[in-house]
Image (cartoon, rainbow, N blue to C red; front, side, top):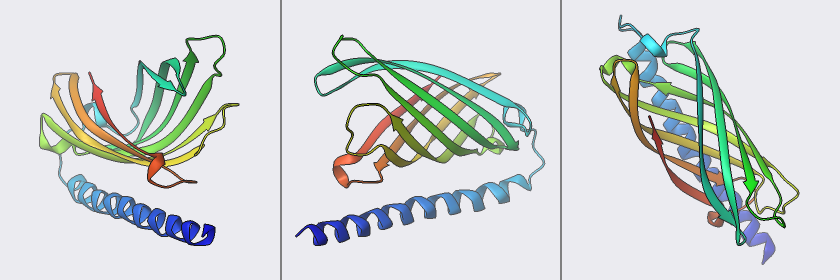
Length: 179
């Protein structure tokens, strides 16, 4: 019945949120203990800003899109950044509608480990469009590893997003690659 499906969805969402929150709490504990070390945070220092831009392509309902994205962040503490991201999905065909995605979040970096910097974070996403989506709101977690060389880095990780209004059909797992 619809009630049973609704209750199962709520249970699955709570389990998923509990898992994400457990990861965040464990990461916070690990980061807090790591802050006790006296290590130069460099590009991860409190007060520094970060700007990232990127792009790619994707398709929804047989329509192709060019995706342009940007993210601005401010380190509120050594290794801990508050971020705001935005994506613009630009249709490559005349009959498709544009999509915009806002995404605030927080990410922690374990810069104390030298050139290998693990990171973990959580975020919220909200899609703005005239398209009908199964889930306009989503929660997510991300994690990975940056390898630093001077002031540049190579990063690889994974990003998991779960739609708030729907079940497993709204779960996405994507790679993250950064330079």
